[in-house]
Length: 142
View (cartoon, rainbow, N blue to C red):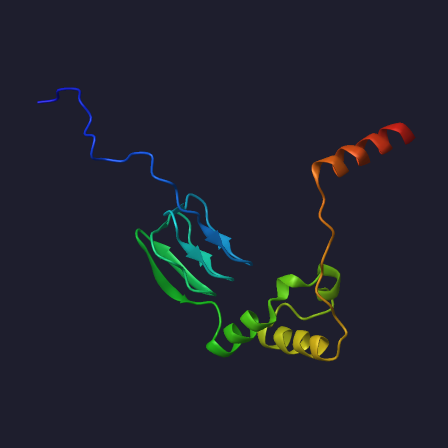
């Protein structure tokens, strides 16, 4: 029988655990992520999946609950991608590389890094005040 009294032994205001999503991650439509999980770099999560465990880098998972389907690349390419962290470079620097072939891409990027032909892209931070200032400048000049 419901007496309308809540149990005092249950803490309903627990702190939520953050979800960590790596770089180069694809998350399909209607995916549900459990609190506190980590999705590794390069992972792909199929649409309508329920993810309740950590996702390995460069793995493809799906289902309810989500399970590994396969890896995006072989172990050699995965190790190279993890080491290179290609997302740290500007799009312009990557434009000349062959992105259609992961093996060639890793080789080309490695060569550019080793030769010092490419540096990490470190843009300056843009804050709200900077945006407002820029908008005001453009409004005055137009």
